[in-house]
Length: 244
Image (tube, rainbow, N blue to C red; front, side):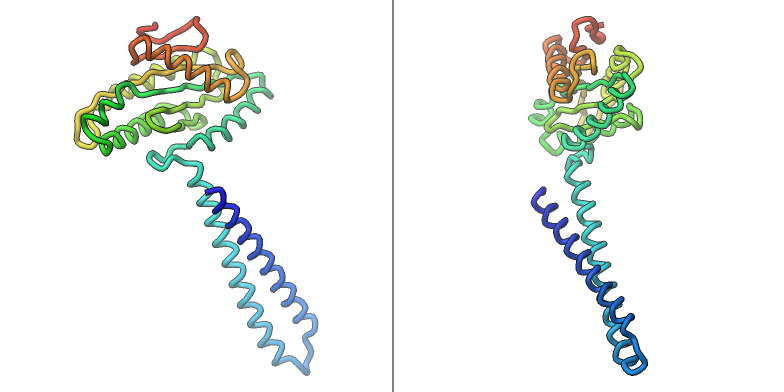
């Protein structure tokens, strides 16, 4: 995908260069316009205008294709959620703002409980429908400024920028679990959906995305060991329902 984008960007640059060359020829032809060669130059100008329009259309079409491919490369193919690439970009922006404003942000690392059993019992088609339903559910539970990302498989990350208090992500985690428990059907099959969630907070637990994801991942495994269907903070001071 990156190689295709590089090639298309090069094609866009070449098309724009060709357009600039054609426009320069047009300007020169207009400058040299005289009564003696009026008819011939007008015909030449018409062709130059056509070439300029064609070059402009080519440049615009290629630029649109580059933009679309760039957008596609940042989204998960199954759920259309942001993927890891887009998450990293949004995290970087949120982290810069948090540092500037002495603020906080949080990462929720989520792993579905018993997802393998759903695939084994009902097949991957139903499993994919579960993932899409979970994606819609998560997006519907968070703010517009938040980011829901699918890492792959049945793993999701929710980025919460601009949190007022380190305990607030726990309220969001509980809201997500309550919403997931309402999913009862996928692909015409009865399903039960729950998740184990781990929470890490900047700057309390880590100050960069890699460490924050690692902390949230560790906290998620604490929830798994507790039996699933709950959330845990990386720091040992708070946990969710069965953990609080």
